[in-house]
Length: 336
Image (tube, rainbow, N blue to C red; front, side, top):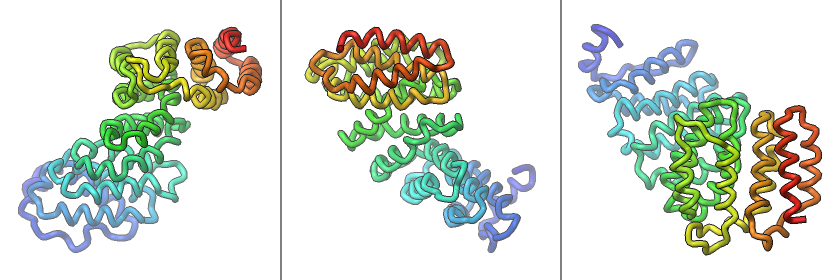
């Protein structure tokens, strides 16, 4: 928007008859509208509701690019007209959720835009509106944590962290989603993509307070700085000390030892990760869990399955993976 265009827009109070035409020019005009919504000049127009309705209506467009641009335009309301986000919150949220559920999106480009746009909108939405879709979104974005596309991993993990700020009213239901994602978030601290690692640190810092364990919360806050390195082995060892604390321990009321088999099973899934550092981190995680959990909980462990999986991973082509497997097999002596 340059020169005379900017001067002319405030006086043009009558919406055009064809905001978004059908045909080959639709995406170009949508791109103009999404940039318009990103600008505060939209506050001087009588067009906001009309533009929002037009973009919302194009979510079912047959052109994938049009659907992506429509969501981007709706997300831009957060920067162009943040005070209007609350008024239109339910409509905007429904659009974002619809984008995540897009069935004709083989490369998840619409879902990626929906997650990015929702992250922009969250700070300006009413809490009651967010809570109405909190669990649905948390469950929907979980598979993207392990996507081969780094941007999908980063966006979904960062969004999950942001959602956790609103999880208090959902109590156990949202805590269950945090626990379901805990192993994944911790292992992806070894992700090959630095932006994904930063997203994991961000998410864990925000999820920590909901876990009912002061020790974990403090560890996440004190050690997971986005601009600092992390000694993963030392960190995960200390995390497992807290996960091994019994229910009722003053610094950790969560009773995580009851989850031992679940934590181990999730780590076993990552023995087949495409990333060597994560394949090395998973057996190390298991080894420290076994090392620190109370003996009474060790009966949860399916030793035959675990030892078979570790022996198979001993054939991994990456030396660092084989070293961590050997270390973990040594720690299993404690529960044999």
